[in-house]
Image (tube, rainbow, N blue to C red; front, side):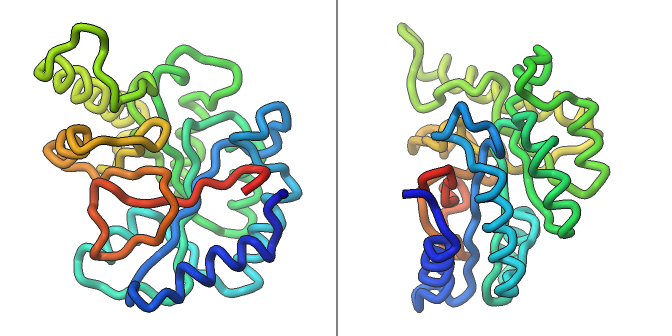
Length: 237
């Protein structure tokens, strides 16, 4: 069953009105828009436009993710119906399809970038030039690791210290590339595949990053800053 405006409404209204969350937000995560050959990580253009229509028609407050987190963890209160829109992996369709539609509606969003595919100039990913363009337009561009490795798993024969060095290197290298190409990068880290462990969370915390997953739920000041929830959206959910 493909996601509809009714389904999105149910998801957002339930989460944002839950009494346990006095000041909370919902974060949506997308990957691709209009790439019909990969439906598991894609939304159709028609679906994406309907979802954006719904958010605007029902007066949702679409804020940058970094603004939401600053407000929550500084003791501030969010307005009701606050959400953030994010994209993982910096696929080319984010630039060609999502960016112009979001820009036309003046809706902010965040792109999490694994830097190796961009450096390797893979055809289905954005280029550094395109990332600079979206950043100049106000889009937040943040860290999704160097290689998009599955970070919760040790390599064969890897020691604890070796694992920690490798993970820290993945995150630090990507942050350096983002800063080198874009001039700055926020302290936001999206776990590859949305998966994390206590050990990985501890590393991310030690480096000073917010850690962002892909498990469903709202976020509030009570949320673990290294285990922040997002609702993953695709053609069927």
